[in-house]
Amino acid sequence: MTTIALQVNRRAVELPAEPRTSLADFVRDKLDLTGTHLGCEHGVCGACTVLLDGVPARSCITYAAACEGADVTTIEGLDEDEITAELRAAFTREHALQCGYCTPGMLVSARDLVLRLPDSDERQIRIGLSGNLCRCTGYVGIVRAVQSVIEARRARNVAPVADGGRTVLGPVGSGRAATARNELRPARHAPAPAPESATPSSIPDFTPATMLDQRFTLPYPPAKVFAMFEDIAGVAACLPGVSLSSTPKPERVEGSIRVRLGPIGASFEGAARVERDPATLSGRIVGIGTDQRSHSATQGEIRYRLLPLEGGAATAVELSIGYTLTGMLAQVGRPGLVRDLAKRLVAEFAANLDRHMSGASSGQAAPAELSFWSIASDVLRARLAQIFRRAFGRGGAE
Image (tube, rainbow, N blue to C red; front, side, top):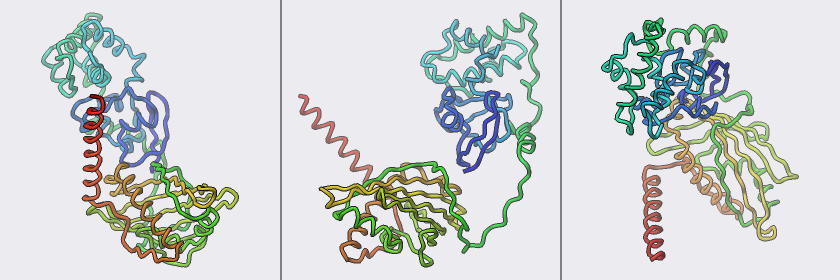
């Protein structure tokens, strides 16, 4: 996680976000400014266009972290803008929208054209809007709307603004944003790289970026399961891919966990602390670790609660798993993949725990793994189940 400070619609904003978070996701998910639409997410369709330091920019391919210190204006921030108000009226008058999905980005781009074009040249308008795709209107109404606003403003002797207010060359936002970033935050020196064997000196609390809920049952009373959870080394031996590097203590457990997503493997070395509440038969494990090979880091939190089943003869283990992943692996650690990996890890952990409590050896040494074939088989099973549901559902209806 990194803290990003910028101006959004004339309001100072400073919020944590993953380094890979796009500006579009930042304004939509963090600020609930959902007027910025996501279409292709490749910078092609233009639905996500916003103003970055006054210049139209594709927010879906712009990292929010790269905008630190910049001035961002979304379609919501143009409610009182004179040009945008005239464009909205013209879009209505010329029937320049149908479904409306492209309209926010179209208005932002059209505003830039009204601001800088000296006259209502159709060819220049079409070139200027070529980066904003519309699948409904055929563009005729849109072009007419932009032409009418330019003509009306020039008739009122409103002169065009040279280059639309651009003052620097380079990527959108590269001028003022760099200056503002230096003004907003003091210079910080990069820390020296830690030795490969180093583990964090403290395990801080954190707010997970992603949360997953899991549940499994064990054929043992809650008190017995809770007592088992006090055996940190025993629990670690049941977790796929986990190995301890020193004698565990509740306040600090050091070790590593190996994870594999198909051809991608990682070994996170770090430490964790264990908290327990006997009164509620619940607890928490908070950990932090780094993978030196991929230069990735993770923070994780597991909260558990034990509930009696079958009159106290069995136990339901409810897990809430939260994590934050940064670095190269964050680019491939999609929630869907991680969710599938977590399900397999928890299932193996439950089976190993059952064997351990029954006196049998867990016999696990392999890393937590999610292979290509396991993903493909899950997809195939889901598709087949869907086909059968449709087939039998249709037959039953007939």
